[in-house]
Structure formats: C-alpha cells, structure tokens
Amino acid sequence: MRTIHTDKAPAAVGPYSQAIQAGGMLYLSGQIAIDPAAGKIVATDIEGQAEQCCRNVEAVLAAAGSDMKHVVKTTCFLAEIGDFQKFNAVYEKHFISKPARSCVAVKDLPAGALCEVEAIAALD
Image (cartoon, rainbow, N blue to C red; front, side):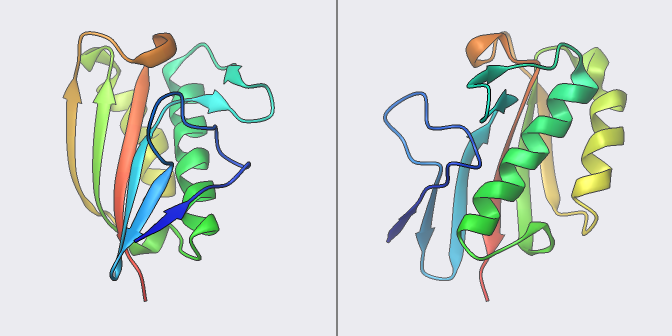
C-alpha cells in the first residue's frame, strides 16, 4: 500500500489519508469544499462547493498519477437533497466518463459543508 498526499488538496482533518493506493486501485477519502490555499470552505452555495470538491478530487488523483477518466465509482453526500440537480450540473462537468455513483443526503457534513465526494479509481 502507498499513502497519497498533496498540498493541492486540503489536508486530512482527522486520522486518515487523502488516498491509499492498493494494488491497481486508488481509494480517495471524501473531499469537502475546503479551499487548500485558504484552509477553509470559501464557497457558500452548492455549486461553488461542488466545484471545489471536484477540484480537490482531481488534485488527489493527480498526486497519484491518475485523473478523472480513471474513476470507476463515486459516493456523494449532500446536506440537502434539494441540491441534487444543482450538484449534478457541476458533477457532470468533471466526471465526464460517468462512473458508477451513489448519492445520498445526510444530516450533517464536516465543517458545515454542503457536499462531499469520495472516489475509487483504477490505475494503469
């Protein structure tokens, strides 16, 4: 196993890694909308937060030598299911390969985030 870390995505806010490579797979921890430069969530709406989540996922993938087209599965968490369509509009711009996905609403997310995205990618 290999631990993946990049300063281009937010540091873990708990006892976990940004991602772990195991065999030919990469397992990314959930990414919330923390702007790594600011060290906090900057965007206040679902579109802005979804955009930052996707950028954070892209940064972790890049640190492992991968990219969005290698993502095979995502799990997405929304603070409000009413944001589903707005979230999807941003998500589909980034995950153009249309990986398998689960998307659920949850009671709360860390740091008051509106969304979170975790991913599994195949490595070549």
